[in-house]
Image (cartoon, rainbow, N blue to C red; front, side, top):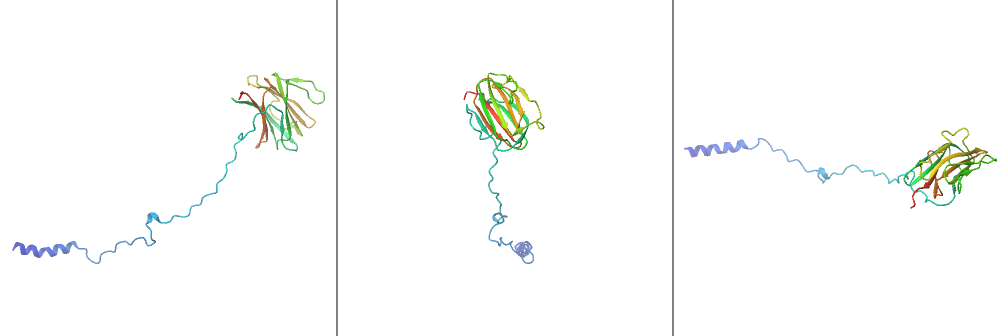
Length: 202
């Protein structure tokens, strides 16, 4: 009797386990032909390569034990002068308002300078000198700051002084501890003439 009852209940139990109604369809695969992880993304825009600007002070000329010159034709006003020292060189900087006009940097055996027009000789600190001449230039109404920069503690550049600012020509005298090799170059924003004196033997 027990076996007959169990056999009768078995179909009922199996029917209770089956889902009622039509089974839900299995989600279809991606109809685009690829899985979501491999679907194409938005096109990437790669900017063209840009060469970074050369930092100021890079690609400098070599030091030379000779006179130098450069600049561009035309007049400009001097606005400032300053000096600095590093472990490898001492630096003189002459700043202008528009551009760096033509200039000459001339070495001389003594730190004595004579202004044009028969002025009194000016002797600076040191035993050798360099004269920086900038024709077509003046600082009469634009120059600010000291006109005599004395630094006896510097290794090479001991003094820089304005020797002449007349007749459309500016002359600065530089007193050096001794004859030194130099390099000159110009910078922009603002326009500057830079004169470096090597302090090392290499």
